[in-house]
Image 1 (cartoon, rainbow, N blue to C red):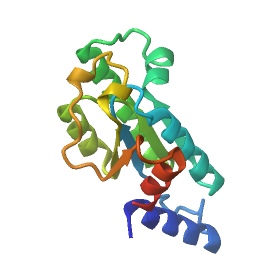
Image 2 (image 1 turned 120 degrees about the vertical axis):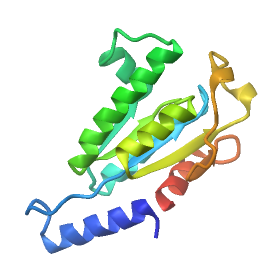
Image 3 (image 1 turned 90 degrees about the vertical axis):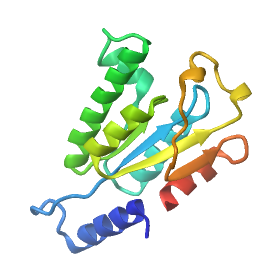
Length: 172
């Protein structure tokens, strides 16, 4: 049984037994969607957020662009600034997951170093590589992007629909 299915199953058992809210530690996980620009991270993230919410789970989507604009406006698009933005996103994700919220991070996350650092901080992370042919991506800085070495899930947006990709993530 996958990490998400285990967490969802246990959460359902707690809900059915009436234990939620009675000093039972809520379980959650972080789903980290990584991939080049325009690969489909945001739309898959929105689909995952909607599906988890429909199933009755607390969930929050942290989109790299929105966080950069709304929360950390002093940061730009340099490699150093992007890495700092990802560290801040992972800090927020950690706070949310500690409080029983499923977190979906939609961020290019171009560096192995920052992704590995984030995995150590967050614990339960499902790394999802959203891949598509490079000619379908915005070529803003994709030459800096290092694909995950061993993602938990790979979604091929050139071969599967958004719903199929979301289902694949939830089944993992």
